Image 1 (cartoon, rainbow over the protein chains, first blue to last red):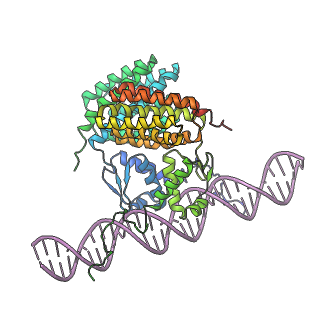
Image 2 (cartoon, rainbow over the protein chains, first blue to last red):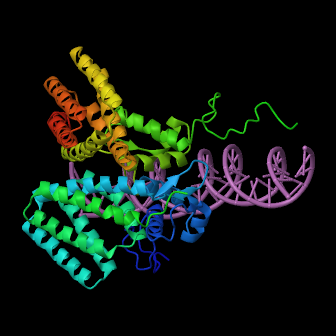
Image 3 (cartoon, rainbow over the protein chains, first blue to last red):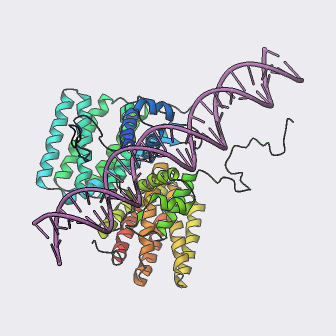
Length: 234
Length: 234
DNA sequence: TTGCCCAGTCTTGTATGCAAGATTGAGCGC
DNA sequence: GCGCTCAATCTTGCATACAAGACTGGGCAA
C-alpha cells in the first residue's frame, strides 16, 4: 500500500522511456510548429488556427499560444491582433535583407572564430569539408546541406559569443526555410563548394578579415539563386 | 433604428478617446515591464513572480505570461522552467559580447546607410550632431544621450533593412540598459563625441567601409568604461 | 440581379481553476 | 550543535470557461 510499481519519484525530464514528458509543452509545440513551417507543410501565408493546432498537437490553447510568441520572435509567423496567426511570407526583397544581415552575422562569427579556433577544431572543420566535398561528388544534396549547416553552426559555436549565438539562432530558421523552399542550382552548388574551400583556407590560416569578407560574399552570391524560386507578391 | 451616432464601423484600435482599449493587454504588460527593467526599477537578478505583477499591473496571469515570452526574446529576462522568471544579469563578459555584436550590427547599418542616404538626411544627421555637441558643451548628459540614441536610430532607419532593424531593436534594450546602469566618464564622453564627428564625416562622404570600421570601434572603445561599473559575478 | 445589412458562427483575448513541481522551515536523528 | 527528511506552502504549467471582436451567409431592398 505504500509503493506502487509506477510510483517512481523521478522528476527529471530525461527519464522518458514511456515518453512521458520530454519538457515543457509549449517548447515541444514550438519545435513541432517550427519543423512544420521549415518543411513547407505549413506554407507561407497559411492561417494558423489555435483550436486546429490544439487537436493536431494534443494540447490545449495555452501552450500553443505561447509557442506562437516564440515563433514570432524567430520571424516565422506574424501575429495579427484579434485575427489569425499567419506563417510569414518570404518575398524577394525580404530575402535580400535577410541574407545581407545573416552574412554579416556569420562574418563576425568567422572573424571571432579565427581568433579562438584550436588546431583540433581546424581539423574537425576540415573533415566536415571533406565530407561535404564527398557528398557533392555523389550528388547527395540532403546530406550535403546537413553538413553545410553543421559547418556554419560549428563556426558560430567556436566564436564563443552567446549574444552572437542567439542572434544567429534567431535568424537561421528563416535562412533554412529559404533554402528549403528553393532548389539548389547545380552550377551554384559547385560554386558554393569552391567558396567553402576558400573559406576553409582562410580559417585554417586564421585570417579573420579575409574570412569575414568571404563569408559575407558567400551569402550574397547564393541570393540570386534563391530568388528565382520565390513567389511574386500578390 | 438603422443607424446610431456611435455606430462607426471603425475596427481600428486607435479610436479610443475614452481610453477604452489601447491595445492588447499582453502588449501593454510587456511595455510596462520593459520600462521597469530599463529604468532599473527591476534590477538584474530580480525574481518576477506572476501573481505579484498581476496585482501591480491589474491584469490576470495570462497576459503577464505572454509578456514574459516577449521579454525573453529580447534578452531582458531569463525563463527558468518551473521556476521564477529572472531579470537577466549583465556581467562584464556579457557586455563585451553584446557590444561586439551590436557594434557589428550598427556597422552594417552604417554601411547600408551610406549607400542610400540623401543630402537632406545628411543635413538632418548633421543638425543632430550639432545639437549633441551643444549639449556636451553644456554638460547636459540626459539630453546628450537622447540625441545620441536618436542619431543611431536614424542611421538604422536610413539603412532601410527591416531584418537589420528587428535585430537592432532586439539588442538595443540591453545596450541602453548597460548605458543606464553605468555613469558616463567625462573623458570618455569627450572622446565619444570626437568619434561621432569622425563618423559623421565618413557618413557625409558616403564612405561606408570607413564608417563601418569607425562604428565598430566606437562601441569597442566605450566598453571598458561600462565595465568599471558592472558587478562581479557572485 | 446586385449590393448592403444583419445575425449567427467562429476565432481570439482574458480570467480563473486545478494539479504538479519547487521552496522553505520545522522537527527529528545523529 | 549540525545535517537530513518531510510536509506545508508557494509558484508555475496547463486546461477550460467566458466575453468580445472578426468573418460569413442569408435576406431584403433597389
